[in-house]
Every structure is written in C-alpha cells, then in structure tokens.
Image 1: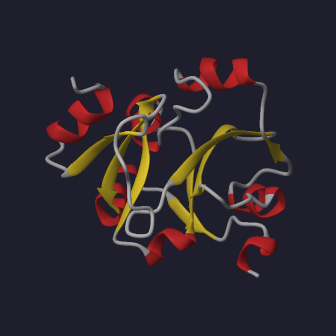
Image 2 (image 1 turned 180 degrees about the vertical axis):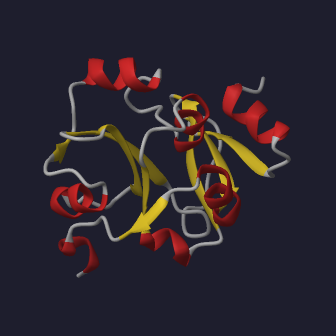
Length: 153
C-alpha cells in the first residue's frame, strides 16, 4: 500500500500513526473511535472545519457561536471539493490544515476523552489512527462543545 500525502506529511512531522483501509482492515472502534470531518460554510468565516465522533450530530447553533458566525451549515458537495480539494467522504483535518491553515478548525471536546482516534487520511476508505495529542499539536484546533444535546443523553 503506497503512502498518500497525509501519511507522507505525518512522516515528515515525525508523528506516529497507523494506516487503515476500511475495505480490508478491521478497526477496533472501542479502542480507536472514528471521527468524521465536516466541511461547513459560515456566513462570516466561509469554510469552517469540524471534527466530531462518527455517530454524533453537530449542533449548528453551538458551532456558529464558537466559529464567530451568525449562521453555519453544510454546503453543496461541489463547494466542499472546491474549498478543500477532497471529495465528500475523504475530508481530513490533517490534509485540510496542510493546504488551508487559515480555515477555522474546530474539534468537539469529547476528543479529550481518548488517547487515539481514527480520522480520514484524505482518500475514500483510507484512514489513520493517530494519538489525539499529536493531532492537537499538529492542527491547533479550537476545542469546544459542538454536539447536539441529544448525543449526550
């Protein structure tokens, strides 16, 4: 399996990770939960990136407030590709940070409950397991409560 740009970037930064292809590898999600990368569009900031657990729902009002937008939402798929360079389903906080460090990047605070998580590596069905602290040190996100209260019940 050849390395992609995200993996090469992590190598260059001397950050340990483990590569996974969802089509062929089994990931124990109880040990390494999967987080999804959402590309949003804010009325003031434009592209805004949010990282939340795979099974969680983003609270748009909370996310708008944290990102200093009045309104924020999911944009059309063509906007996602144009602004990040990644197709829907392959967005990665690492790759987006590499190419667009100016975009606001927000992580839900639940990330602090884990030592390692799984995030997209920038290709469909390809992910990396990475230490949370390494990811935080690399991307420098804003950490806040971004989830719908229904997810915490």
